[in-house]
Amino acid sequence: MVAARDHAGLATTNMAWNMVEGVLHAFRRRLNIEQALRFADQLPPTVRGLFVEGWKPGEPVANVGTQAEMLEEVRSLRREHNFSPDNAIESVGFALSSVVPSDAFARALKTLPPELREFWGGIGGPTGAQQVPRSEA
Image 1 (cartoon, rainbow, N blue to C red):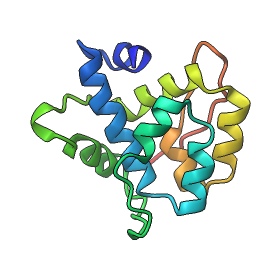
Image 2: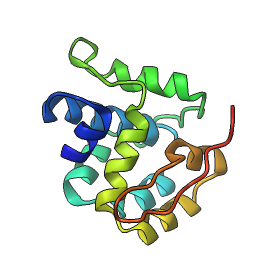
Image 3: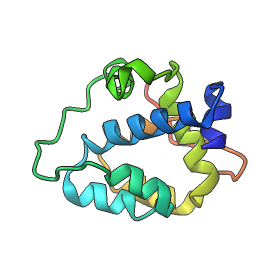
Image 4: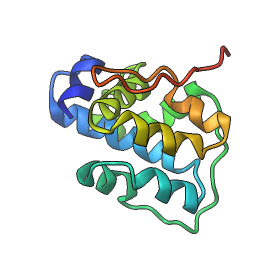
């Protein structure tokens, strides 16, 4: 939470918690069950708990959409208390790269279609996590 908070420029870890949860849920909605479980398996226990919280696996998989649409979805979680900045997705990716071994993160991403790998485009951090290129839109 601290890495996500600091990268996003948020004032509190409570604000970061809401942002992280929103980003994880927006991403999860775009995965089928197998993809979601494979991705969740790479996450630390607390983050994995946030990822699966409230999940209804029978719901239809959402279209990937644009970064702006995903950011709006992130901001829709507890909207009145949501301070997710424009770099929310990048900030959560940065935080994940600091706690998930880069090879595990890369393996999880490799199983996803390119448009879903782009969700985490540009991730890199102090642990040397693999850079995942983001296509120009």
